[in-house]
Length: 187
Ligand SMILES: Nc1nc2c(ncn2[C@@H]2O[C@H](COP(=O)(O)OP(=O)(O)O)[C@@H](O)[C@H]2O)c(=O)[nH]1
Ligand SMILES: Nc1ncnc2c1ncn2[C@@H]1O[C@H](COP(=O)(O)OP(=O)(O)O)[C@@H](O)[C@H]1O
Image (cartoon, rainbow, N blue to C red; front, side, top):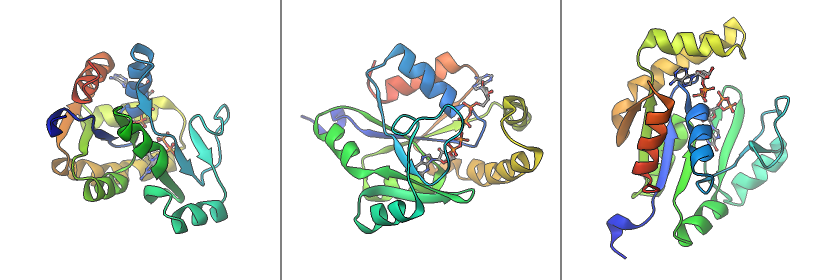
């Protein structure tokens, strides 16, 4: 099989509130067969979140062990919690010839690019700064202080856009989901 048609590892990153979860949810509604890695995290589950679905919720000790045993493809600390991608499940999917999608932060995206050279990094950008603020505020899940902190982080993330292979601007969820599927060669 030629290298350019091999299924690739695709990383989706972008500032908090830009619409990453919304785009991924829409994509999986249209194409339920698309596989998304489930990360391990030390963050506490939010109401409605289930172990093994949104995340594998682990203790600090368990996370330490995952790191020590080399079981994570990448990991990072974000807003006081640790998050990491289980390595085995990702490699199994790629070896089976299936495309793989990771929704992780900028620090994780950088590590993946370093360790897996043929991965592609996709940056999800807001149509404008004001729209990002509107979405993050409008979601209504964070306090004003947390929104401020996430917007500070967003400035750093937006400044790193040129490190990514592709930028998709999230104006229309349907359009972005379609473009992402095309990049992953699912459609
Ligand atoms: N590096 C890394 N980041 C992750 C991983 N899983 C999730 N993240 C990122 O961690 C950040 C916080 O996630 P979360 O607490 O679920 O908040 P939310 O994505 O804003 O709802 C987001 O930028 C996620 O993309 C992972 O396995 N590795
Ligand atoms: N293209 C879009 N147009 C308008 N609102 C959007 C769009 N994409 C997402 N949103 C809204 O923006 C908010 C943040 O989206 P979310 O998917 O939670 O962001 P992220 O996962 O990147 O933090 C949600 O209220 C969501 O409904």
